[in-house]
Image 1: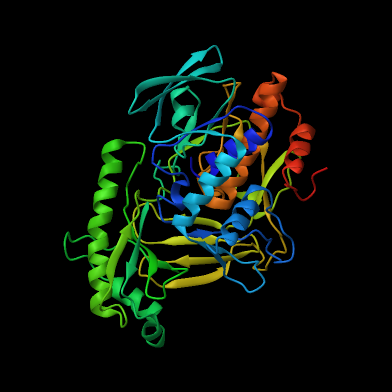
Image 2: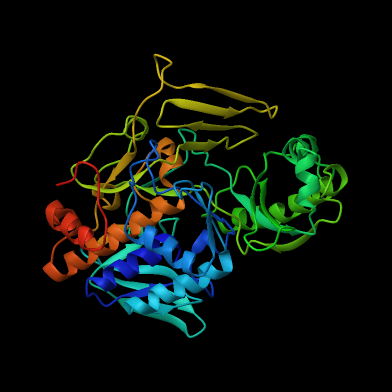
Length: 439
């Protein structure tokens, strides 16, 4: 029931399919609501002229705008979006019910029953007990590829060492004097305040801070200033450590901000994300594995189902450090000492004029299950390309494509890999999607 799952369910239902959407929390939206990740990336290409993302991502932004619950970073509306998470919960409910999807909240997919190379039944757990849901087609939008893994689909984790990007815990602070903070160059003060050892456990603070304003209150702000390393969120003990260590770090962060950042003296915690934000766990091995070069070179695919511009963004799994590779050829690094370096990743040291990258349908199609598709951050990528594909507006596109494809396959009695690209593109076009180079 995150952005990918919601878009998958809505897209399939709009094709006439009977759809059940399972969500473990009491609301939909995944990391955009439960995780307090209030930033959605832009819908335009690197040229800021070509709109490269349409369909349900654009519709969700429009629904938020009607509620005055979204703001764009640019006056022309071609930048990234800041959303209100509480209004987003209502928008996700609205679009799900409007489409006729059957929702099932407080429910967790726990196992599957196979029939040959098909998933016959998904087993779920909730307050009513253990239940079985039989379906002609299944979409795994769990983020962690839980259903695919239980169905025996091959998957990978992390880099060549098996190490994954660390999760971050988002939280909101109130009681801020932002006018004073801006006069005092609070961004620099934030960095200085956090560039020191943590006093409660001796660990070096392993992160830099990024923030987003509250849409309605000038004295509130969302912060992502907590990062827990060496975590595997598919392991319950490790996941538990991430949540609790994240909250311990959060207390230290708030204390540092109160003590060292002008305008933050009266800061108080408004709320903490329901769940720590997971960047990376399992990645399904699909009919095609998206490569780093595919992203950076803007490779065009005949079976394209999504387009994006978010950079390859990889957080060091063990210590400080982040690298961003943009498709225009530029590169930014945040080094272990907190300093920043800018340059080009291109061999000739020159910029590129790439508008966007593309993701093919084959990345949603697991190797060995005929009636299963994946959507969200668990699609078939490498560790490097995953750094670009894992963000909200991309996951929404994967979801919409998976939903449309599942409905077409169920209606035509087709396996996922046998769906003709032309039929998929026609059906996506009917839902407002379009892709560069697609016919």
